[in-house]
Length: 175
Image (cartoon, rainbow, N blue to C red; front, side, top):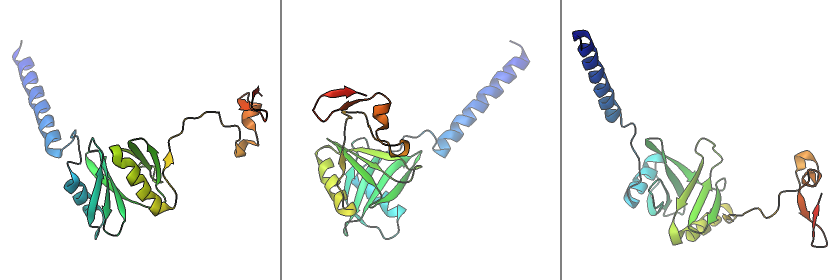
């Protein structure tokens, strides 16, 4: 190797080590997790002034948590990039219960849907959401039949497209 090639190799190595150090110093590439209930409460309290969490439902993996205060208000905390984001849980949040999983969908598209694996407590937290919204968390459904009514396309559009639909006699008709 020539002297110029060795200098170029050394400079490249120094540049790569500097970038790796800088990435570590900035905290990029970290895997943020909610460590425990105290951590979740602290995150919720940082997100909203005056919020004082007393009870926590933490996802088993630590990516999200629901924090409830003494008045019954709830805050959803989730990992968002290298940081955490929190939103109040209110009537606009749609909950879906599927065995040990509770999926909360916010109207804010950038926050997205959050699925928490809560184990046996998933049903209890879904019922708490029911008191907030006046509706229960919807059970997960598997489609038994394709939808046959699309208001924006006119009535019974699925039948016109050839979907199998139940007839009034209980047998299947291919439209």
